[in-house]
Length: 68
Image (cartoon, rainbow, N blue to C red; front, side, top):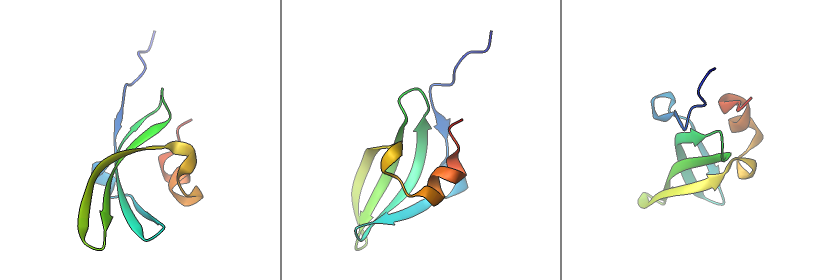
């Protein structure tokens, strides 16, 4: 039986998007929790690593990650 992956590393793909003037770079995806770790940057200032729900991401980014 195949073992479920705990996380999928996406930092090499350089996936980035912007929400309300804050830029986010996708780091990893947790399929079991449907959460994404991102690095947030606002006006060149790093806000640190944050966890966002997959549902709150733009459609274009969801198509790239494809959780199914």
